[in-house]
Image (cartoon, rainbow, N blue to C red; front, side):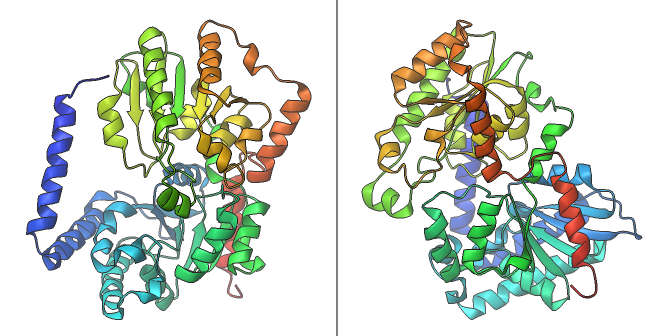
Length: 441
């Protein structure tokens, strides 16, 4: 494994000072600091010229930058302003209880004084955005985030609509019921419209209480990127461009029902570590390949993994802006419970699904059904995973050869979750957006 580097040491120092700030700077001062930083970001960091003849759409980029990128590439009729929401709205955490922030208690149960104070903060941010760019519509990845709900109310007070461009298109069988109850209780839908990936997802939101007229099935916006020229951003992480192997790593409790992760103590820690350690060894043995461990944008152990796994031909990368490139360029994709499995299936990539943890068998009815996916390799044991990888690196690709029937079934499964990944998803979004600006809407 990699040693502690100066870069890793600097990360630890930053974390230390963040902790000191929380301890020694009063909350009221921290709120003012965060607001000052938010306004500075809006006024000085967003360098975007506005065409006054076009309507302006503010996009709240909350870890779905690939969808935002796809919208920007497809856009011709609007001013699109993308906002780094984790930065602009990070002061919101100082106004809410932990259980409200974690969606474990009703948003309305937060003290009215705190909500009113935060709404004033949102009004300031809204005014800054409107004064600089104008605002005709707000797009958010979700409206159940604690930091966005008062902003939506501020927008409504100013006769501006908010729409959700849902980034979480894969809802597990467990969440298809449990998340409905949780959302209805703690943060019901309050936006004016929602755009979803599939009819299945539309059914989910309809169960939450969103009327069908407020739900549009358009597909996955970022799938449009597969129809553009492939980016070369990954090459910047390596000293040489080589064939690429990608492992989509994940949170230790990804897709595990809350009660099981807390009450039963279920995690994927062992399987995840086995996968990563084995791929690290493969990277050592095969310097002719570049390896990427792609972490989920909100994965908490990113820095820990970056310190543990690092070679000249291996990088652990976070963020939300390179997954499509990784799928498009990889010779082999290793993944678990992630959208990347479906995207790789759509792109006819070689995929190994890692499914040997005993918990995966216990929770199979609650997880995304990739263990039954046609047209990919499902590794039910670690030994199977090792052997398939060994054969791949020896040049034997027979594990990834499937019948025409299996290939057809694979794309039927993709279409269940991704409506028409035809390169025109964003076009459908903008066409639907036009209706929201009509006087009768």
